[in-house]
Length: 359
Ligand SMILES: [Ca+2]
Ligand SMILES: [Ca+2]
Image 1: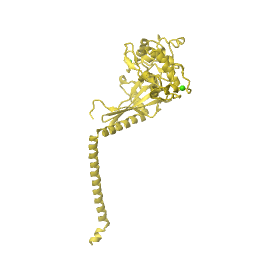
Image 2: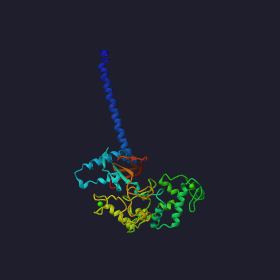
Image 3: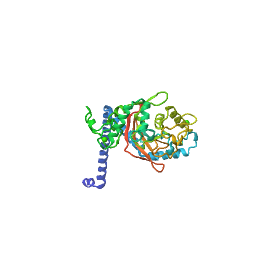
Image 4: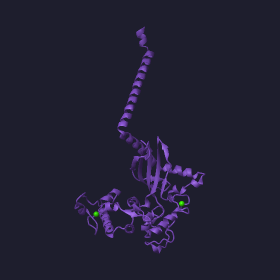
């Protein structure tokens, strides 16, 4: 009887069930043990924990970039239907009338937050596309000697042109090979990365230049105001006064007036009454095209050094997770609709603890 009973299917399954419970317990205990151990490891190796959090922050930053279009549409929708018109700053969301920078609201997700930021890439001066005379205006204002400017412009030309014929003040492979350190060859194809400019003869000196940016004599580094992307045109609706002055060949004072006219009656940037410029304000004399009069319009030809709108943006995804912040960046282009399309793989431009937060 006993043996029969023990062979009954019911008892057998019950025994299996209890075995399963034991295994589950074992697994659970093991999981606890692993969890406790990894907590301890994380405490001992603080870095591991920070790296894990940064990785989460990075994922959030990438999520922000991946969903930039839907974030943009969502905010446009929200603000369009917002009853609080005083707070509506619709102009920031209309990419056609973009006026500099725009930041989305911070979205909570997966225990952290993400956010998108857009900046106009045409608010910068282009190392490769902006005509040399504009650069000369800028360098003159910055007090760079004409010898230095000539050498730089020739070296940049030689670095990119296919031949090995040295320009008057330039540098080709023979010159780079004759250097004491970092012997290299001239690239002989166009620059494709900002970092490359440091390899061009004279590059490091030019890249670390500080220039006067306003009539009060404030100095700022030149490099963040520069790009290698886009048409080389400088956007009057987003560029700083110092670049507008160089582009139009006008005084810094006149260029500051242009910038102030963007701010509207309240004299503040980024408020409801800001004005989108439709042309160069009357009274501003353009050294390069005085025959065309004082006003240029939005249909300025591609040969013009200034523009009034942009289609090229620098999109930033900002991810924050448990005290860690990661910013990822990629160029983005406005497509024919209201959409925005990333042109590059995002890359990390910032990765750090959030100030004031304890880890
Ligand atoms: Ca060359
Ligand atoms: Ca204003």
